[in-house]
Image 1: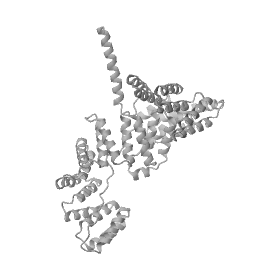
Image 2: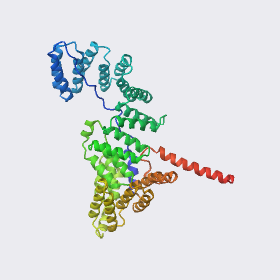
Image 3: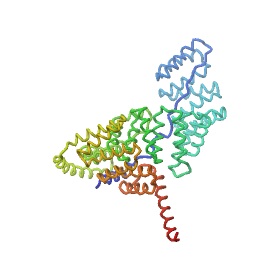
Image 4: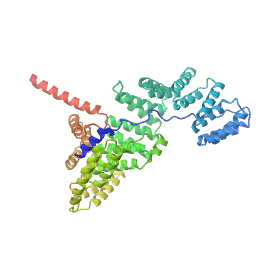
Length: 492
């Protein structure tokens, strides 16, 4: 079975990437609490120390100090909310619930506390009780944005996507600079477009772009925006956002993974491997701690195996495919492919012994050219890749990278010439055809792009991103051909 064939078959066995892979809700954060000056002045320094301990994450110390402050001033609502927040963070949910109620009993119109209590209840899975607290906030202070945002989260959790979008939109209207709400609104709109219900991709993109504007240093927002750009066929913009996200957080595993996928479908095997291996080196505990999207290690290993196989690095491809097989319940296809790879590896070992050049030297030069490209030394990079071709005229990687450099310089036709040469060297590499389809779109040749994407589909079996814009290209081509046929029939 061909490389693309095994890749397609394995993906059909449950390894297809979910479209987004993002948590349904943005990370919650509590408003800062500044204790009011108490009736007992001795309580105030304790409360200040407790607040500082809370902000530093020392919840045990916070609880101890704020309890002493409450003993001196039991009528201060701020202290009870601080105690409840610290107990919630430390996992003492029973006492936290009691103290949230105590704070609200002291001031039933305190919307910030009701909002925090609702967030607490949502985390406990008590969604109806949380909604009751948020509804009370709406009545007390209709222009307070936070409760609408959290109500939207709950409705989205309950499957009411339209209701969630309405509440997110209200939060954004009340507080446009609320980046979490802008992000949640954009993602919810995008989800609605994927479910086939009314919704515009452009609106989803606009909300994520607004979220980036108000929170430019949030890597998660850049990541989500990049994912949606990919679905909208805007791969250059997506790459830019992935790079920004990784510059803000180099330990963002899902971002490395998605960036690696993007580079694969741009025909770039080496950068795919670089990003996939970077993702593999990040502990899942780090991802969980940051509340970032998780990645499927089996999918990641499959990309690594496929890229190594296409590069002719069969021992590495075999090792990665063995890991894929170990993670699958139904691994017959993977096991068979491992045997096929082992046969090819033995035959390739004989061929390598007859080579007039050192493959390791070629790979070192490829790495050098990639580093030069990343550092902006494009002419040096071009020279390095040309040097590779003087040693091995059939180097796919060198030819493809010269295409990338030519495209970056604005010579799209010249880039296409290089990409066509490269695809002839690896005719089974589906990503090379997807890459050419994308370039044909940039050249303003939608009909040609649609046909190239179709060629990709014939090899891969499915599209890696939302195919709506690709289908649109193909439909436009079909309409144009039908129009020409009709004109011909009428003798025009």
